[in-house]
Length: 251
Image (cartoon, rainbow, N blue to C red; front, side):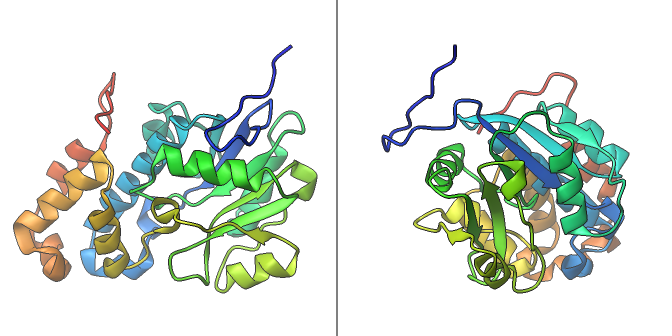
């Protein structure tokens, strides 16, 4: 019989580990607030998701990562990191996609929804957050601004109540979720704007996001990314973002 593990804080992690569910939009529609990047926006969105999954799958206490997406390119790329993908059958928005993903999980262990735009995510911080969340029936991690949510964690599928969207932090508090924040900046710093991207970069992003930023910054500088689409670098970006047949992670 498997016994619970104990993390560095002395808190027992769930014996069966956490299942993480991550929704990813079609790349053509992802990150609309970064529209100034033109077609390069899709490459950046994929890089953000790849670095988020890479960190999540290396986190102690995480049993598996399930991605809900209708984008075949996303599914194929994330599979290289051990993530499993299913189509967004409800096609009724983010919260419906998350409920659908949780419904596909086997067993009654703990589940957490994680946003796919956390390129600076550190496994140690995710592990610490999950250990803290395990103390509560329902808990969430607010984004860096405090009004949004980057992770929602529940002890069981029956307790999972996602209310992502504008004002999600308040919405999750309203259904009894406990806020878990602390110094979890790599888990709280999502990327919706160029300012958020710059902050994540300062924290230290993963290899795929860094590769894309290096190309973009070399062309125009972070403050001038709106003109990147005119430079014809999408093919180069694609070779940097797509994982090789047998990837190795340097982070």
